[in-house]
Length: 121
Length: 108
Image (cartoon, rainbow over all chains, first blue to last red):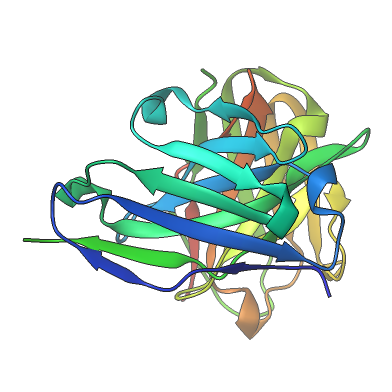
């Protein structure tokens, strides 16, 4: 079964660092881009960036450039999203998703279950 | 950056009715790069349509997508109880994905 399994919910204080993970299984992890998507409470979906695990080529959406770091370790089929200094406004659900790309289309076809990050003093 | 606008914001319909959801882009989008997702409360989004009109694996044929250029449509031919949810369109361009704000389909 193709799946992405994310790490568990986190509660952090402002200024703390954090790394959350997304482990892929059931497919060739290095053959597909992985994206990270933010959903703030009661709001819509925002793509933060994408990474190609084979060579760690990473593309950030303009709003998130410099705010987070996306990385991957292909040896353990895991992608990461990390913050060096969290803010209350980082409170959100974070999803990872596999990018399906072919001549007929380009979309996120497999999604992780989400990781809830709460930042509060 | 391409901006997607979805209308209406909320669509109130009864089971069995037809739902027509609109997604408009601020500039032309390649049809290959237009997708639709469904999200229910407490769940991750689910891919419905990719390439503007191709149904994803396991998606019932009551869901269909159409459109080109700047105007795209998701149609649900006959609403089932499980179809009441939020629907997002998404496009890929300039090495990034952007989503529309969503249309909520709720029970009338």
